[in-house]
Length: 144
Image 1 (tube, rainbow, N blue to C red):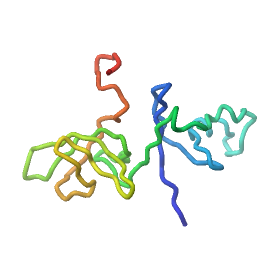
Image 2 (image 1 turned 120 degrees about the vertical axis):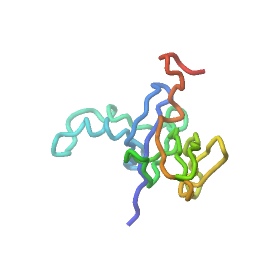
Image 3 (image 1 turned 60 degrees about the vertical axis):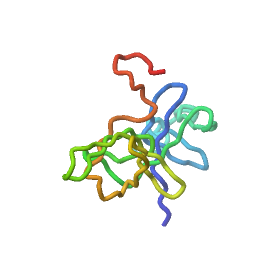
Image 4 (image 1 turned 45 degrees about the horizontal axis):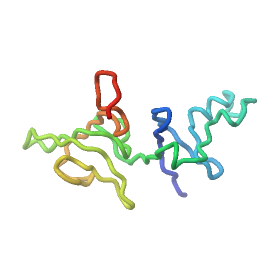
């Protein structure tokens, strides 16, 4: 049995993150919008398929990211593009700041100290602080 990866997508135009993306008949869809077009029994309602937000042009409008099989300290699943703070082993109070990057064969943490494996023995806990497409400006304005 082949497991499909769990995906999310950043909508470049709307500046919005969709946490559940699915592949249906070879096309990616925003699952929360698709399910909104279904009845409680799961059968499709009479809502037009255009409302399902089928993402035909992924490269231009969306950035697709893959979830890892690992979880942050609060139980949230880690995903490529997540900004994180990393607590190191109990022998130090040092923290690393970085984000998750997907390589062809694995995920890594790109930190201010260099690239680190997600399974590095020095990591005590990982805290998600946001994602790389969010504005870092906390005053409400757009980051440039």
